Image (cartoon, rainbow, N blue to C red; front, side, top):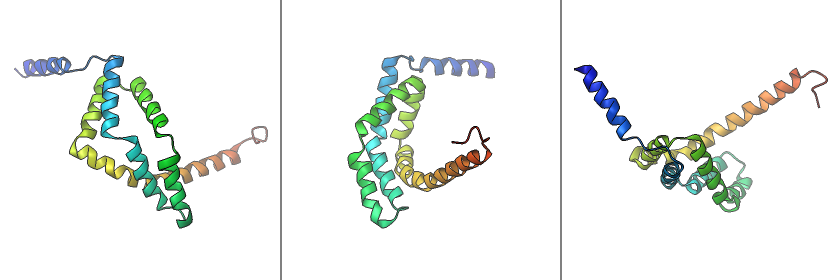
Length: 142
């Protein structure tokens, strides 16, 4: 009996799967981007990251990230990459999650998260590059 239930469940899951076509990927990528507008993400991230900068630089950084950044170009690149990388079902799952109350709440916190993590990531990349330079043979050094 358990195996019949499992078989029926697995068959029903495939019945609800989206056909993985370019058109379906585009629709689901659009749904995702509507649920998580890049312009809002950049604005939230800019405000949060600016708090880690000297006060004299904060407003300029916020302006760059919210006024000078070509959000349409970045959004197009994001959509194109999502359509190449994810299946229609994966994009649907992302859009469904980020359209939910929990997903919206998580996205609102993403700017704060990125602001906390980015300085550590940047410092670690700088350390790794310095370590790599030290380990380079004389022929490899610039």
